[in-house]
Image (tube, one colour):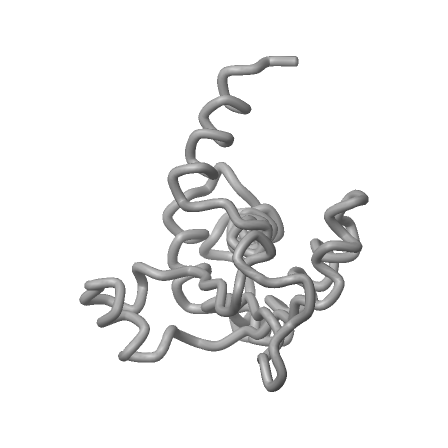
Length: 144
């Protein structure tokens, strides 16, 4: 179908609820033991990261951050959670995710949401950004 003949009046960008549904599906599809280990992690979707979060990372644009892990990773947590400790949370940032999706036509929106979610869950499991980059690079080299 030609773009000029598409009826755009009924089409809208995916909503916060749409992104949340994709994230929920990705969480449901996690294999064991990861699913059990991530069962207490909450997922929240917002338009953008808060200004103080962006400043903390030295980012000037809210489009630079697609996701964030907030909490204490499993490798840093004691055997018993501290009283009053908030649950570990993965934040997904809708507008940054949609911007990335618009610029990279080699991935579906669901694949991007899943990738960001799993990256942030990696922090819950105690991996650093460098650890995860090395794992991804090794997976890209391994054709299996």
